[in-house]
Length: 108
Image (cartoon, rainbow, N blue to C red; front, side):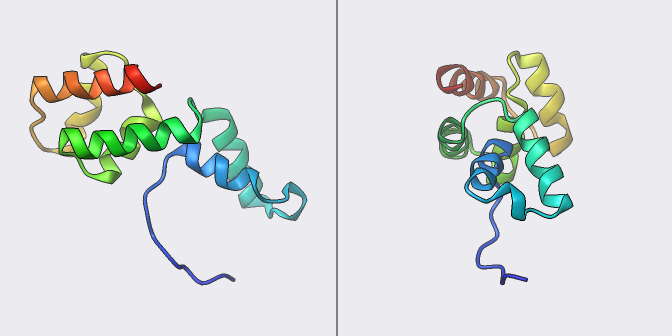
């Protein structure tokens, strides 16, 4: 088993990109399921996902973990985004939600 070198939240799109570099024949069952899931549910390419994630953290004052959640879902309306961010148990201003949606729309 490999040693953990770094722990960092990544999007489903980034998981897919990482797993595509490996040999599918050498994957164990869990890795194959993970790759299948990432392939089915990644909505954008990894480069766009990273860009959106970084912009959300930088411009909207959310954590990297929260940004990953947003990128994985890619909400398109303020209602969707508010329902989603409600679970974070912190107040997100309407102007911040609008900024988040703008970042998603411009980069997805």
